[in-house]
Every structure is written in structure tokens, then in C-alpha cells.
Image (cartoon, rainbow, N blue to C red; front, side):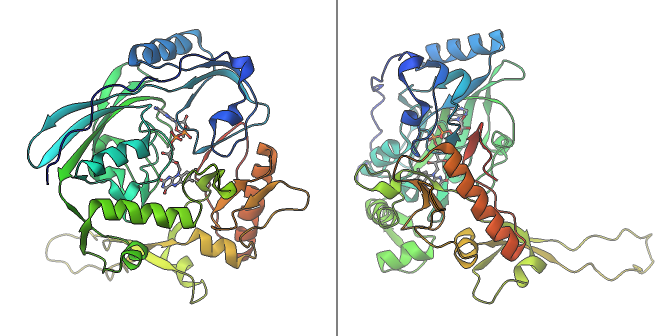
Length: 383
Ligand SMILES: Cc1cc2nc3c(=O)[nH]c(=O)nc-3n(C[C@H](O)[C@H](O)[C@H](O)COP(=O)(O)OP(=O)(O)OC[C@H]3O[C@@H](n4cnc5c(N)ncnc54)[C@H](O)[C@@H]3O)c2cc1C
């Protein structure tokens, strides 16, 4: 197999559009959101930095949008400057027979990047095929699917830090990536300008997710050609309307609307026997400090586990089934995936928000567990 680098030729992108003519609904995959006070579409890094620095200097409210696939924007729109990031370009930082390091500008399409890398024989992000959105947003919630996360291929990001105004490189460790989380998602404000990734030259990929293994007819841990992993992930996603498809009304969504809750073991144990549960870590017993020669007065503390639950199971078993909608509402639970809220018929952000809060209340009432919304709410309450 010959592994070659993706092209480093920037792809031309749209230029600026007057704010008045654009509803933010047109920039989001769930298709809600009123107008922006001001809207800019920087297409080069220079323009992007210039725009962002100018807005910060003026002290205006600001909002960054990449692919708009993980946000719900108010029907009132946004009374500040919206920066729609359209910067494109992939630069090869280093390459040898075994690995490829690249710097990718924030506005590149995530799935476009995965497709190009897989086609050229580079492994590391193939199970993340079909995730909509931009490369710049991918580390913000450490995108993950089918047993992979961007964390494992990430070498850090180029970041314009809001608090210092400095352009810095943040290493993967500094991003403190977790399950759908990072320091940026937790509140470190700024702009991801570019993402650094390292891929491996490998004809195959180790399958790390049971549903994917079943679809491929292999066992977890088996090696499968990277292109076959991508194709199978795309087919699995399509069956749940989890890829953007203009012909699939259930794909007008933010993907999974809730993260899988992570709870202490005793809460997980109290759920019915058929509730899916995954132990995700094991905290060591607490050390007891005693003077040398003395016996500890306390027995070792019992080990405590954290357990990940299935948000989809909790929702369905709270009585909210696929296709559910509140009376008179145009927002619905996807008919193909109980974790997705979809806008099949011109729903408003208020209707999406109402349904999200209703689902959260049902799960809380039934199981005492708070569901956390995965998308970012802009001027709307999602929980
Ligand atoms: C059908 C569907 C399936 C999905 N499946 C998955 C999945 O399997 N796994 C998964 O993890 N996610 C999934 N998602 C969610 C979403 O695609 C990802 O979170 C994606 O990374 C969001 O990218 P975006 O460019 O659309 O971000 P946006 O929605 O544009 O922005 C999301 C947040 O990031 C901020 N932001 C955007 N760009 C930047 C930047 N350059 N610098 C700083 N902040 C920025 C925004 O201000 C906002 O707060 C899915 C969504 C859909 C619609």
C-alpha cells in the first residue's frame, strides 16, 4: 500500500454575506436560529484572526460557528457578531513511511478530511467517519464514535486565547479531553485556529466497538481494512439518520442530544437489570496515613466505580419513544434514534428546547438522573 499525504491546496470557500439576508437557522444542522446582528465569513486565517481580534477589542458579544452541527440558537437570533469560520487548508508538517503529521485549518470539513485520509491509507480517525461539522470544533467536545475519539490522533491545537489575547499552541494534555469534554467546552474561551493530527500508515484498523464488530462480522480487537471500517460506520450511521442527508428528514438534528450520564456505582446498581451499564474507571482505595509501625485504625476504603449509562435507554424507558412529539409541537424525537431531537417540519428553537427539557424532566422523574445536553444552547435553555 502506498500512503500519500492529502493535498495541501486550500479549497476556496464562500466570502462574506450581509447579516440581514441570513438566518442563523441556515448555518445550523437542526435548522433553528433567528438573524445575527452582524455576520462575517472569514476564509483565510489572517481574516479570521483580524475579525476575532477586532470584535474582542470592541467588546462586542461574539459567537463562533463552524458547521453548526452542535448548537441550538434562539429564534431571536444573536445580538452580536457571529463569525462563521470558513478557513480551509491542510498542511503536511512531517511525513515518513509510518506516520503523517498534519495541520488542518479550523474551517475544513471533518468528514471531508477523514475521507481523504482513509482513501490515502492513513489510519487513526476512520471510525469517526460521518460526523458532521468542522475540524476546529472537533477537539472541543473530543468527538467520538464507534470506539474512537479524536484524542488518540490529536497533537494539539493552535488557539487564540481570549483572556490573554495570545496565539498559543495547546498540547493534547493541556486540553484535558474527556468524554465529550475539554477545557474549552468547560469555559476556556477562545478560537481554535487549526488542529494538529498524527495518523499512522496502516492498511487496517483495530475494531473497538461491539456494534461495529457485529456489522463487520468480526470480533472486537480484530483488524479490518480502514476503508471497510469507514464504509461500515457510514452505513450504520445512515441507518440511524446520524449522517447529514438532505433526503433524510430525521438528519436535521444535532446528532445525539444528550450525553450518556456518568454516575456513581450505587446509582447505577439501583437501575433495572436490563439497563446497559459500563464501568469506566476504578478509583484506588483511599490511602490512610499513619505513623510508621502503627496499624491503620481504619479498614481500607471500599473501591468506588464510576459507571456510564445509556441515555437512549433512560429516555425510552421513561416513556419517550422514537418519533415522540409534544402536542402541537413541530420538534420530535427521531424515528430512528431516541437520542436525537429532529426538526422535520420547520420547528422553532423554542419547540426544540421545550422537548429537550421535557425529556430531561421525564428521565429525572423516573430515575432521578439529570441528562446533560450535548449541543451548546445559544439564548435557549436545553435543560
Ligand atoms: C447527524 C449528526 C451526527 C453527529 N454525530 C456525532 C458523533 O458521533 N460524535 C460526536 O462527538 N458528535 C457528533 N455530532 C455533533 C457534532 O457534529 C460535533 O460536535 C462537531 O464536532 C461539531 O462541529 P461544528 O463545526 O458543527 O461545531 P458548531 O456546532 O459550529 O459549534 C459547536 C461549538 O463549538 C464552538 N466552535 C466552533 N468552531 C470553533 C472554533 N474554531 N474555535 C472555538 N470554538 C468553536 C461553537 O461556538 C459552539 O460553541 C453529530 C451531529 C449531527 C448533526
